[in-house]
Amino acid sequence: MEAPENIFSGISRVHLIGICGIGMSGIAEYLAKKNFIVTGSDLNPGAAGRKLEILGVKVFEGHKASNLPDDTELVIYTSAVKEDNAELKKTIELNIRSVKRAEALGNIVNEMYMIAVCGTHGKTTTSSMIAKVLLDNKLDPTIFVGGNMEFLDGSTSRTGKSNLAVVEADEYDRSFLQLRPDIIVITNIEEDHLDIYKDINEIKDSFRKFIMNGKEDLKIIAFGDDENVNDIIKDLSGTVRYGFEKSNDVVIENPGYEKSSITYHIDNEILRIKVFGNHNVLNSAAAFITGNKFGIKADGFNESMKTFTGVKRRMELKYNNGIKVYDDYAHHPTEVKVTLEAMRRMHEGRIITVFQPHLYTRTRDFYREFADSFADTDILFLARIYPAREESIPGITSEIILKEYLKTGKEGYYFENADKLLDKLAEIHRNGDVFIFQGAGDITDYCKKFIKRMKVKSNWTVPL
Image (tube, rainbow, N blue to C red; front, side, top):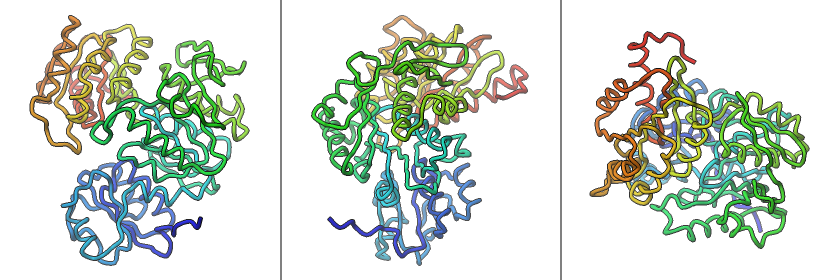
């Protein structure tokens, strides 16, 4: 079958609506480095916008029809862009071709030898680990991941010179169905994005379709301790299953926590990582197995992992002076649970979690699971729900999580007002406390404001 024409063939001017989002900024950076004339708009350009402008990208704050140059040849937009967006409406009026971000990404990477990392949790960390291992071992990949990485100079993408690509494959809005990978890594499959999918069976069907999209001789590396993963790969050849259970093809053994690292064994090889938690043992095991397919052994893997400190906002230690303050992206009950379990292993002080639910539908569907996920928290603070793309749902607030959590007998609070929440945090803090700000919304701003307050109060002077 003849391959469809690449949407970037024969054009030079591209406009991106929502250009500073994690996924979009990587594509904008790639296109700028490929000498396209790139423009774009975003409600909050921030640091991502400043970084793109250094590359020659014109970034507009806000969305207006006048932002879209009349000579634009292609418009790329995010799934969050609504039909009434002024720039999208002008795109239609001028008859300019427009595609979602997922289709644009597929047009960039589908003809490369592609490693695609998918799953409900761990995609960003696993794809970033794979990318770093390949990069440090001189394989020069093109990279698209869903987080800002130090080894990418704070970017989410990299333009390599080889024909190898590492891509984070997102199941939200079925975006990953635009990709045609050579290797698929599946980290896990759980219920999520129930505003898109009806139930777990529909989610699994989507993953099956993604596998069907793979190229000839597709290889699959899959987490074999996961019942849902096993269900979709059970009849597939060319699959390597990894995990802690002895039934896997690759068995992870003897994980041990040291002061600043975790060691574990695979096939008598000793592997070491600097990011904590059994979930990161699993993420790194998938990266090790993938690297093996390119001839990278334990020594090459361990050397690369010496300088892998994690993804921005994945349990990122922001300050350490009397108390510790972490900023974290976890926004699903399983992510919250495994993160807090890891933190309990690492710290003896009180763990105080400040959580901001993401989406009304996710809060409605998982409020009991969220309450259970805070088992390793000593005091829980809940902020208002971050709505993202959704309208409010009557009766659904963060308080429904709090009511379930308080049944455990632990201390918890809910504040609609950010300043009042921060006032209470400052009031109760004591030396040795560990503060974790969690969520996928603007909770990171709460974290920054809290640190600023505490620096003044405690005369802190030395940030990490």
